[in-house]
Amino acid sequence: MSKINGNHIAGQETPELIYVYDALCGWCYGFSPVITRLQEEFGGKADFLVLSGGMVRGENAGPIGQIAGYIRQAYKTVEDTTGVKFGQKFLDEVLEKGDAIFTSEPPARALAVFRLEQPDRAIAYAAGLQKAIYFDGRLIEDKSLYSDIASQLGADGEELVKRMYTDEITQMVENEFKMVAGMGVNGYPTLVFRNGEKMKILTRGYQPYEQVSALIRQHLG
Image 1 (cartoon, rainbow, N blue to C red):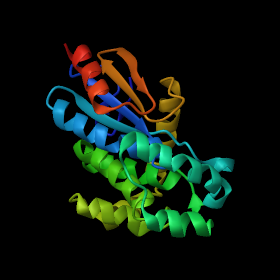
Image 2: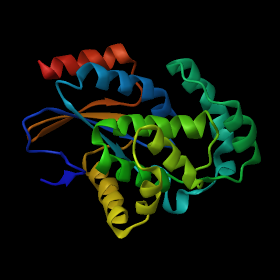
Image 3: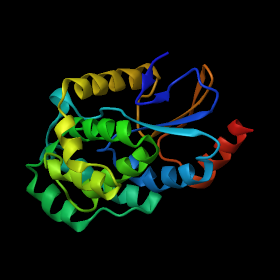
Image 4: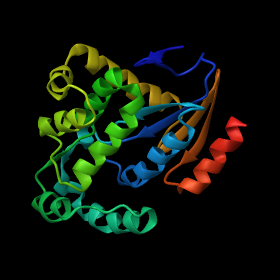
């Protein structure tokens, strides 16, 4: 079986929790505190791997104004259900102006590079990306977004940006999107439990911490 960034998808003895997310997924933003807490609780019993799904790319990528109406309706539901907050800079500037490019590919590339260097902190990096986009109102096309968060987590932010558009990362991200599709994931966030050669989707969509934690305990025995 293949390996992604030092973490086996199959063929290792340690159970693995695979968090499939997308940096532009609002429900994943709401799930960030949950997956962070789960890694803190179960990190000694299972490996954690975060993969990008590629939700907005190709012909679906474009100015955020094209989906601003949907986001304005949906964000309050995410806030009320999960407890996260969308920042005023995102709501009042990025969303209102409407010309910022909305594409999943750059954050997926950045995560892939960071995961190579610090796989154990990749979930923190993914969470940092989402906070920067949805709370701080950082722009996806701003490369300093990716370097700043990497630097905050102790990685070389400038080197990360240099590597984002190399052939190696281009191929890695494309393989990642294909792998996610091959796992039967069709929405985000999705949490997959892998033990040996067996993989099982534990949750689809947002679920509260207590519910997911109980499921994981059942599967870890």
